[in-house]
Structure formats: structure tokens, C-alpha cells
Length: 186
Image (cartoon, rainbow, N blue to C red; front, side, top):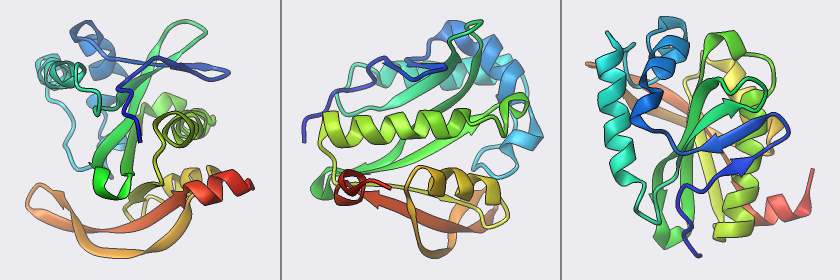
């Protein structure tokens, strides 16, 4: 395994890039303030752009680390920042990352998240040399599970009360793909 950090990646329609403080207005406007987007996430909608700016400042401070992976999803056409994707947890001992993603409501059901996740899977297996990539979603968020399945992740089971949402706990459906699955293809 060779950590590469958050390097610029491209897909057919997206640029996956590091985020900066200058992205705060777009982040706030395009997804972070929207309760439809944050409904199944572990954080509430941002109250104002200053919350988005604070989050971005934290992320920006981690970019010098070779083992930090967090991208903004930007449309190639128009340069609009539409969401984020990255490793929300990792375990070098077993060569694994846990991927999370968030995309603005206006871009749901258009294949952007699947496109970004597919590129991350390729990058993590081929360039970084990981063995396992996993992700999870709340059971009611079925579309997130469909994204994972479309990208080759397999359902592994229900993790009961494993997501903290304020003062509540929620279940999660766990999916994963191994390097051997990726190499075998669909």
C-alpha cells in the first residue's frame, strides 16, 4: 500500500479535486444547507455559510497528509461543485477505507455519485494498493445502496445502531468490495 493523498482525479463528467475555503458558498448553496440531502447523514444542515467555511477549513488542514482522502465533485461542464466523496475512516492494518459521499439534490439520480465512486474504487485499488473498500447507508436510504451495488460493492449485513445522528442512533447497511472482486470484474 502506497498512500497518495487527495490527488486530482477525472471521470467522463467530473473533476474530483481538493476543496478550499473559497468553495464554502457553493458547498452551502448546493448541498450543505439542504435537509433533503442531510436527512440520512450524520450531520445536520449547515445553518449558514460560516459553518461550511469552518468544515472546509478543517478539511483543508488535512490535505498535506499522504493518507487523507477527501474530494469535491465538480462538473467538468460549467465548473459547478456538486458534492463531496472520500474516506471517512480507514484501517491501514487491513488496507481498508470506508467511503462516504454527499451530493446536492439537484444532481440526484443522474449517475454522478456512481461515476465518482467508481473512480475512487479504481484509484484505491490500482494506485494506492488497498485490499478493501466499504461503505454504508441507513436502511431507508435505498438509493445509496443502489449506488454501491452499481459500483460492485456487495451487501454484507446490517450494523445495528452504528450511526450517531445527534442524540439518536441509527442502523446501517454495510457494503464492501475487495481487490479480488475488482480484478475479477462484473
